[in-house]
Amino acid sequence: MQTVDIKQESYFPHNFKIFGGVLIFGALASLLISTDISLVSVLVSLLLVLLGVLMIFVRYGLRIDPGTKTYTEYTWLLGLKLGQPESFHFIDKFYINQVTEQALATTRTGAKFDIKNRIFKAYIRLDNGEKLHLDTDKNEETLTRRLTQYKNILGSVYHSTD
Image (cartoon, rainbow, N blue to C red; front, top):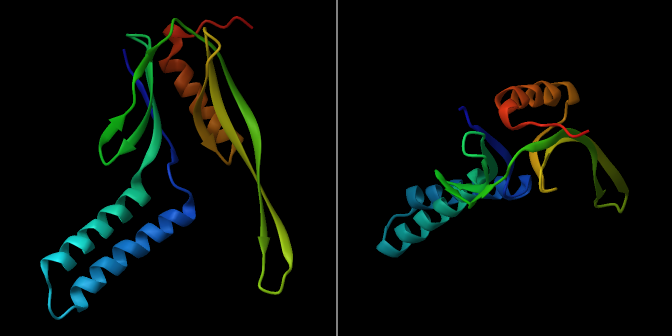
């Protein structure tokens, strides 16, 4: 049977990912500009590059295997999927929730702006009542299409009780 492997949100927020890019750029630039390169400066630069790469690419994921009836919520770390598989009997429900993200921004002059963003999150509910986050999108129609694909793949373990 085909498994579902979904890459979810980043582990770090967007501003940390930008800082990770700055770390990579700064570390490589310092190596190129430096006139006397020592072992310590090379090691520090490599450490900063590795830290920047981690900040940019680490993310959450979910893998569901309908053949073995297991799921794994994992953290993707440069090719490694860190997480423990859990078993379930069947998927009870697929559903989408609308979520409003809100932030308060302040300018240098003291003016405050309320920033709101509407996103949609898809979840599944398992037979034991556990709720798992499947996917996120800003467009509900796009998310609904992907949810239909997930339902088709996981159809053998989907038994709606609603």
